[in-house]
Image (cartoon, rainbow, N blue to C red; front, side, top):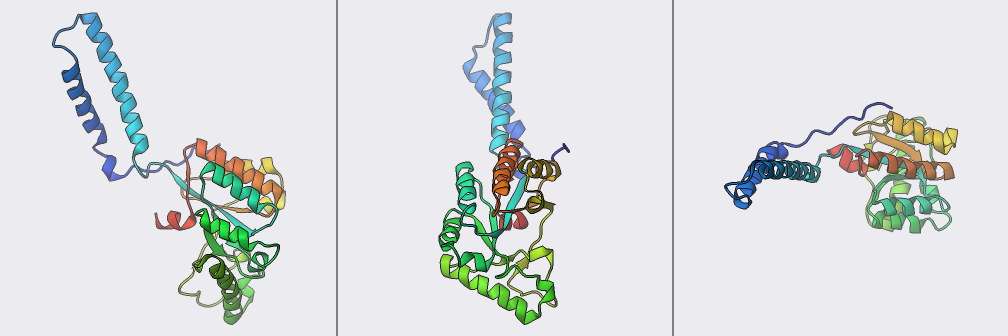
Length: 251
């Protein structure tokens, strides 16, 4: 597995180590009498050094912005069967994701409630067209209609119109893109819709992913949802922080 890229610590943490060392010395002079037997003094000094090192590590862990960021995104939902399972797993893990929704799927199976839940739980919602069409093959007016219908549905449910668009097949529309939209593809393709093999999906993503990557997955397959939650667990253990796509792009 490739070595993970690390996130640079911000300038505010640059002088943290000297300050902690100074605090450790002040504590030492205030709490240790002026004379100690050599062996006792040596033992106390070693203990203080270990405590100071632990304090430094703890302080560094608390510095904002030290974790490498990544975004996990899901296309083609919402799905009445598997999206709820995914949302439950993400909520349990305290992870926020980005969902690119198909308008036609919002309108069926009572999926409006899933969109409402995504929004309420802090996930970011984007537009994946109404019929999952290739925008490059549509006229400007046709592409605008596809996106507009889905925008309207999402806004009616959440009160907010999405500004992110994941173009199906990664195909951008002809001509100029709408000025209030940001078209976003991905950097790591899980190929989950092709393999439909949980272990293979997990292996591919955790092997390929690096800091600031955008992971492409789908929330309409059992194997994809299983793999996504395993990926989250593995990468969180490696120190990654999952954020919604807007935060990653603005970072």
